Length: 332
Image 1 (cartoon, one colour):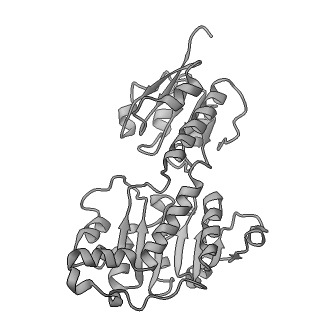
Image 2 (image 1 turned 90 degrees about the horizontal axis):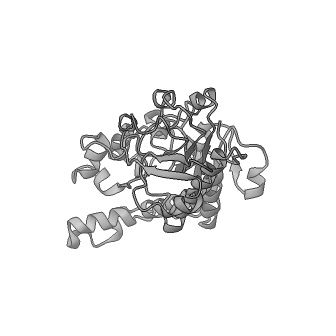
Image 3 (image 1 turned 135 degrees about the horizontal axis):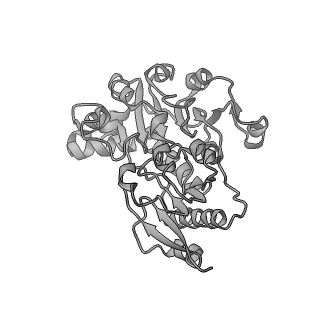
């Protein structure tokens, strides 16, 4: 090859690029931009042959239409809602993702948040920090029901939803799922229950855990109205995408006790603004969310091995696209 391809990593990755260089180094020069907004990409991606975009920014039609010779866009992650793959296809640019890098970790995190909330671990730890003497008793979380036999509702039975279902089953929970796009038979294979409507799932779930992509159909699928259909004293855990849950509904639901707790790993804006109503309630010692809400920084996917998987598989998809080879994880 006389001239190497040019691959731009738009965001998130800022280190020595060892995984990417091992796979792409013989055919491409790799340029990390470390941008935090799409505007910062202007003048830096137009002549790229390949683009790898993480989750810190969006790649919209505005940027895609400026690409002069791009052969492939890779989203090294599961969700592709931050890439306009329809416009990319209209330009003849394939878009690929990495759907399997963090399956176990996200499922583990969903169950970890569930146990921290439903066993009172987070609440008791938070109360003890405030007043060790007064809070040194279990009565602050009474009544705390046994998990066995209680409903664990999964919205979206994809790879991560299935992995979470297996883990919730191991806790003895009654696992049910709502997914109108999932073919028949998965309930039999996994030994879980399928419900036909979202309302059925909400009504029967002690814990609701979305594991769906962010689409027009799933945007704010959990909101004030749907939370009201969950049993009083139930829990919400979100490790999917920020826009799946309308977090503005959570402070009131937690204050009323309708939600006994919530674990939120993903938000629409990351990091959130300090005046975000959810964050204000979370920081306020006088608000029930202070003790019964867990906020994590979009970290459910993370483990050392998973990061290598994500970067390696993303680079492999990029190499295939650059060389005109079939891409197994094509999304458009």
